Image 1 (cartoon, one colour):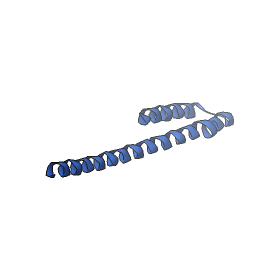
Image 2 (cartoon, rainbow, N blue to C red; image 1 turned 90 degrees about the vertical axis):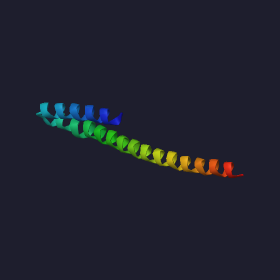
Image 3 (cartoon, one colour; image 1 turned 120 degrees about the horizontal axis):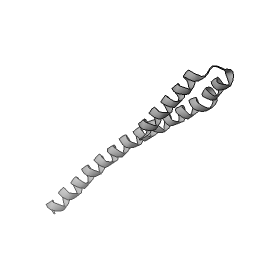
Length: 75
């Protein structure tokens, strides 16, 4: 999800940057587009970390459930 948004932001910023020939346009890149790209990058990284942690939690829960099932069948 964030990869697509990041790719679009990169493409838009690059297209704009290639068409900029003055200080005002350069300031838009530096003050608006680059910070947006940076924030999207942070969101993408946070989302990836969340996905990794979520997978770890799911795996731990599966192990815990299997212990619970094994204890229940031994009683």
